[in-house]
Amino acid sequence: MKELDLQFPTCPIRNVLGRFADKWSLLILCNLHTNGKMRYTEIRKAMPDISQKMLTCTLKQLQNDNLLKRKAYAEIPPRVEYSLTELGASLMPIIGKMIEWGQEHFEDVTK
Image 1 (cartoon, rainbow, N blue to C red):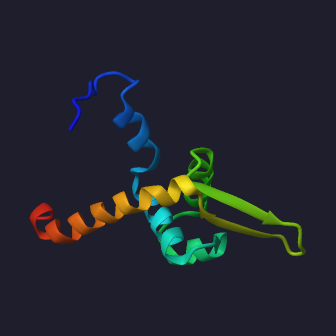
Image 2: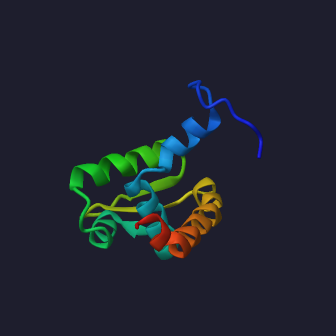
């Protein structure tokens, strides 16, 4: 693994992981990966312990980071769907490996 200087704000690991490594972002990304396109209410039902404000903020941040896309349909009532971008989808194999590691080592980590 390439050595990184983790001290500086320009460190890639600090900047990239900081974008999606929180609990809610990972759960949203995993839900979209599993379910494809989802509406706001579907994401909220899949994650009942997230507040409306936190879900809205997290969706906006993931969209700003080009990990998910938001598509609004000009209908009455309005319909909005969220899905992974190509960049977001490219992240899923890595997140999948993290999930596998977590399942394998859950007992070791939570002692």
